[in-house]
Image (cartoon, rainbow, N blue to C red; front, side, top):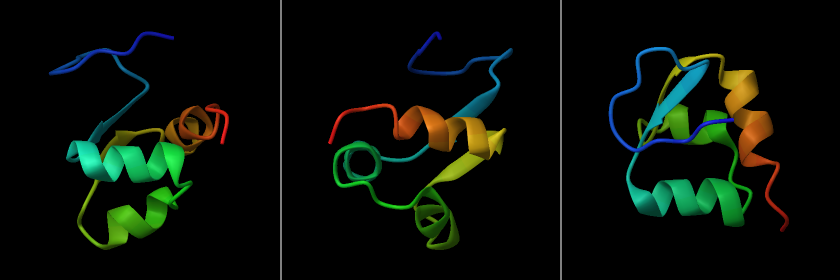
Length: 59
């Protein structure tokens, strides 16, 4: 797994959002699809892989 800030060209998935949204997704277990529907997060690539990554952090 490689995590980088900024533009990545060979990623399985990328998320674009502000830091508060990302914190909610990781620490408050906010649903990724809810953030996407609300226009607060844009996901390119494999959203399921990104969701698994977000859930890999201990609550």
